[in-house]
Each structure stands twice: as structure tokens, then as C-alpha cells.
Amino acid sequence: MSSTTQFLLPDLLAMCSLTGGVNPHYEKGAAESRAWINSYNVFTDRKRAFFVLGSNELLVSHAYNYAGYEQFRTCCDFVNLLFVFDELSDELDGKDALSIGNIFLNAMKHADWDDRSSFSRMTKEFRARLLRLTGPRAISRFLKRWEAYCASVVREAELREQGEVLDVEAFIPLRRENSAVRLCFCLVEYCLGIDLPDEVFSDPVFMEIYWAAVDLVCWANDVYSYDMEQSKGISGNNIVTVLMKDKNMTLQEASDYIGTYSKELMDRLVSAQGRLPSWGTSVDSEVARYIHGLGCWVKGNLDWSFETQRYFGVKHLEIKETLLVALRPIELPEELDSDSDIE
Image 1 (cartoon, rainbow, N blue to C red):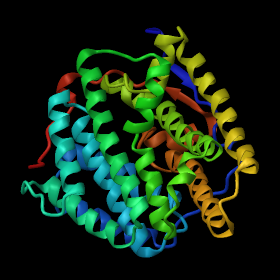
Image 2: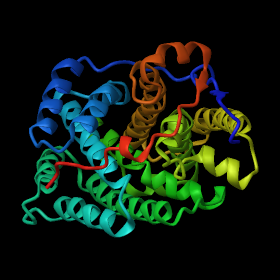
Image 3: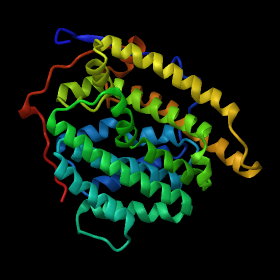
Image 4: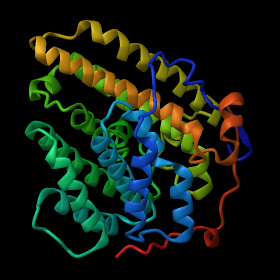
């Protein structure tokens, strides 16, 4: 593996039969959300540049292309908030990641909780907007997912600290949580103005669709971000690394495997919809809209990945055409900026 200098990405866009779009409120909502997050001065100059290049709001525009202005702006704020948390926790040990995670969790769960940190103030502002238009069942699911997300990020930090890479079977459930994809899927109900019954999420066919969508986003993110992460020395929380270690694959074999499995997931997401049970006309309509929202996330994530410099730098359009990724050199410790201005 040490002699590998490049690899071909799987052509995930070609195998995706879902339709996408861009939210009409993108420019206004993105500018306001970016100004909101920057007003807290939570980034060093290097991280702020990475934040801008990542264009989180463009991802939101694709993923929630059907959302009204208020919902779109709130989703932008949430994804930007996640970016802050992810950037902070990426280079922390388990204890410190837990400390940040508890700020996030307490601010979300308790209206009167405040440790006076920038992070808690940001979270509380988002919380107020989310609660205004979210149904009780949906908000309950969101808070449970938030707790699971925080726990999984702490676990990820512990594994990174120990230099441990999980096997595939153990990695998949952890990645489903620490990717925050399930949290983002909770916002589909918020954007659509629906509050699905809990029994929908207990149905095995519905969950087959749901898990296929989650894994499609997670595995795409991992194969697209692998080069960036390996250059920083933080590729342990990535299905590419897991496959290479657990299945004794080369980098190219792991990438090819992700392509094959993603095709299976896409087929499953589409075909399972014909086997869904009925919960009554009204709920069935809401379930169909929710599943369409999951599809927007899957397709939107693929589109966004090649429209920005987040993963592939200035060559993102070229790599979209060729699928060829030349591995970046490992960054020296002094090149890594792990400081933050957050309080």
C-alpha cells in the first residue's frame, strides 16, 4: 500500500437513478448562515478557509432542495454547526471530545442550560428555530439521534487516540452514527412539515430503504474523502481504511468494492419501495415524501462532492470526469492547524 500513488473512484453518479436539484433560496440563505457562523469567530484562518471551500450551504441546497426559506436557512445553520463540532472533535482525545459533545447535548436538551460558551449559544439559537416548526415525535427522534451522535464521536476519538481500526461489522453501525447522516435525515421531516408515526420507523421494509440511504451517503463520503484524510493522518474512521485492513484489500480493490456495494444499495433503495405496507392514505403520502427526501440527500451529496473543493481541491471538476485521484503527501505536524478560537 505504501507504493500506491493513485486510485480510481467508483462512478457513483453513473449508478444513481435518483433526481436532484438546487434550492431556490440558496444564495440568500447561504449568505445569512455563513455570516451567522462567522459572527462567533470559532475558526482559525486555516479552518475558516477550509470552511469556505467546503461550501456546506451548497450541500444543504442539494439535500433539501424542496425546503422553504426558513427551513432551508435552519438546515444551513445545522450543517455549519456540525462542521464546527466535527472540526473540533477530529483532533481531540475521547475525554475532550466528550466535553464538547456534552455542551452540544445539554444545549439541545435543556432550554435553560448555558455554560456561556460560543458553542452553546450557537446550539441554543439553532434549537429555538428547530423547535418552532418540528412535531413532537420528530423532535424526540432528533434528540435521541443527537445523543447517539455525540457518543459515537467520542468513540471515534477514543479509537483514533488508540490507533485502532475496527473491522467492517463493527465499523458500519459506528459510521452510521458519527457521520451525522441520521441527524440530517431527521431534518427531512422538519422541512416537509410532517411528523411520522414511530411505527413507520419500526417497519423492516421502511428501515431497509432508510439504511440503504444512510449507507449510500456514508460510503460515498468515505471514498471521496479518503485522500484528504490520509494526508492528515486521520483515515481510521473511513470504510476505505477498514476494508483494506479487515479484508486485506488494496486501495483500488477497496474503492471498487464500494462501487459494487453502492450499486446494491441503490437497487435496494428503489426496489424496496414497492414492498412498503400501508399506514393509511395520509401517512402513506408522508412516507413517500420522506423517502423522496432521502433520495434528495443521496443524489445531492454526490453532486455537491464534485462541485466544491472540499474533497478534491482545485481538481474537483477534472476528477469528476476522470475519477482518478492522485494521493497527496502526508502533511507534516507543523502544517496541521489544530487550534481553534472557540471558547
